[in-house]
Structures are given as structure tokens and as C-alpha cells.
Length: 161
Ligand SMILES: [Fe+2]
Image 1 (cartoon, helix red, strand yellow):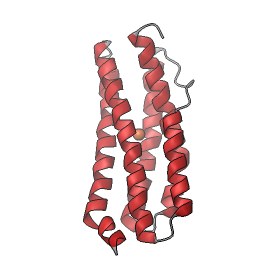
Image 2: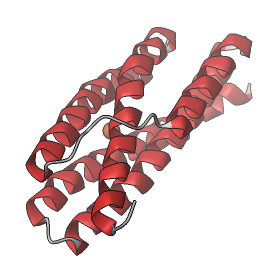
Image 3: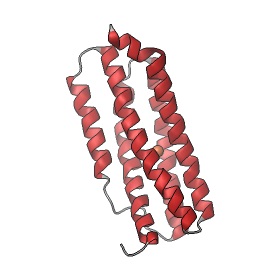
Image 4: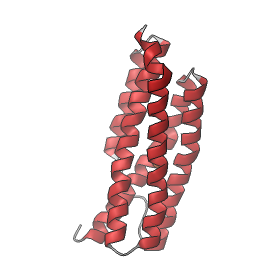
């Protein structure tokens, strides 16, 4: 990588791989969520995640970048950790609290990635691209907030007993 443009391409490929892996992993979270609100949150985020992946493909096409190339090892690790947790946990309420924790780790990772990508897009003068990526960033923040509300309102308290 020689310049910010190439670093930007690399970051977008990383995010594309992250969204791709998440598309594969979320159905397992949906299956394991025995709380209807949590299930709904994962289902709607799966739909958003598919959109996010497509949005990166569009953005890369606009910029003349390749969208594939990098495997996001951080997302791979986060997903492995979540799957390992699901194998170990016995209590349903504890499982839900832990799933939220794992999902929020994923959201925070994506928020940081898209935050950087938006900034690079602006610095490089790609304002339309910045707007599209900002839309995804806003949706990641909203998904994180929804998980936070679920944890605070109910699921953590249930897991205590
Ligand atoms: Fe996403």
C-alpha cells in the first residue's frame, strides 16, 4: 500500500469480508435466540448486513476498486468466539446476555471500520461514497443501541437469577 487511496481500498475489502462472514454467522444467532425481541433484532440486522455488503460492492465499483481480496481475521475471531460461547453456555438467560455481549463486540468493530472508511472517503474527496458509508455507519450505531436497550431493559436482569 503506497497511499491513502490504496489503504482505503484495503479497508473496504476488510469490511466487505466482515459483512460477508457476518451474513453466514447471523442465522446461527437467530436460531439460538429464544427471546422474541432478541431474535427480531438479529433478523433485522441480517437483512441490514446483506444491504451493507451490497453497498460496499457498489461503492467499490464506483471507485474502480476490487471488493474482494482480504479475509477479515478479526471478524473470523469474533465469530469463533461467539460460536464457542454458544457451545459452552447452559442457562438460556445467560446465553442471551452473552450473545448480546458478543454481538456488541461485532458492532463496535464495524463502527470503528466504517468510521475510518467515512473519514478516508471524505479526505479523498469521494463525497457520494462517504454518504453511502455514513448510512451504514448510522445503521451499525442503531443496531448497537438496540442491543444495548435489550440488555439493559431485561436480559441482563434475567441472567442474574
Ligand atoms: Fe454491517
